[in-house]
Image 1 (cartoon, each protein chain N blue to C red):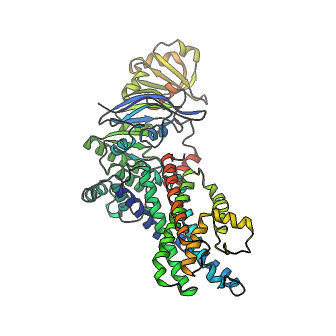
Image 2 (image 1 turned 90 degrees about the vertical axis):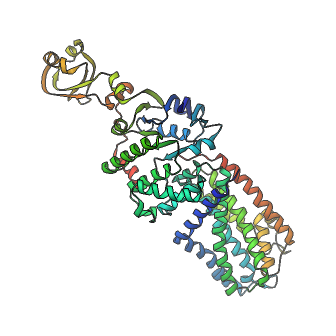
Length: 322
Length: 253
């Protein structure tokens, strides 16, 4: 039985369509990634699946319940870690967890036990009784993960779980997520615009852009659809000659004209022949295709080009994660 | 359906947070005290209303003002909760929106009553030594006023989309409610111009001030039972609107 089943889910705000008829299903126990740039519709999708937003049309069944017809049942079975920190600043870490336990109708004994277990798991035991106001961004995120898992949900939603965190915090959070979800067989859906995150954590990935699902599959499956290797050539390359070479599957020139990326079938065997036919070469680089190449191939733009890593968005993220 | 545990959880959060926001607590006392000591003191010597010293006369009104302000702002501050997403955690929990509303309502009433109680005590010490058998009824009336005003504030907060509306709320809701309520003048006086007399009868707060005034200084322009009925009706109507507003509330982007 699918943990989550989505058919033609759509969300419109007046004329603007944020999510445009997406469909996919997620198996129980898998870590599923929704990968796309800012504004692609990831958070909107998660909001609809977690019953925070009412869809304009379409259907979503989460943990066996329809989000529109049985929202309370859906909420009982899900845990969610939001993009913007939503832990209460003026309460302590422990008090935040206690509030959560009461809202989810956990009895006091179980609650106390689980709270201590979770605090231990995310390494916040000694800071549990300090006000969240004093926590760093990474600590808040860990508290939120503890909170999302406190009531042992069947499904966990993570909306950009490591946004704005330093690489060390990011790596440890990936570890928590992997350990926890595999151990307890929790189905996890995570949204991200970090390729590395999707690549290393997720069992399957769906690429979303401008409100539509572009392609879906395991990381390897996605990469294999566009060939295996990328050969980057710097130099005076003749475009016409390139177009005649059969083993080249795709050609993309860098916008500054400094290099050309060639997606090549079986570069290991074809490299010598390729290089001899191409023209004047300054240097060559061979690498395995990445998710960014996949993204570029299917959407026509790089995930980075949408400007989400601009100075302003970085300032904005630091502000919200403090 | 409501979850008692849920209501308690939300109420508890409001009470804890109230005591931890020290600046807000202290600031909320300054205004009523200024009105009482300076405005009341300044006019007190020269005016008496209905045979009573002006400072004593306006004390019930100032008490109501304190409850009014703290109640409505409590409700309207929910818009910060919405913008900063603290409310999301509550909205995604398996509790009904009514539970969230009532938790907030009781939290707001508690916060307003704490402030009101301190002012009442100060008033007793410095201004008017009302008969102590009236203490419980006074507290009950204050709770009734807080009930409808917190609910009203929550309705406004749940329906407002940005906090820029705060100024509008202050000028078009709070001040009119206060000024037309007879807090500062006698609504029963024959010297009152007709338009004022009519408008103040439409102001639910008038009945709150009137009830408090009859309990504190023994003078009321309307029968006491009428005051209570109006306050309760107002409370019920605003709560009903509150439950509906919370039901329709969606997260702000």
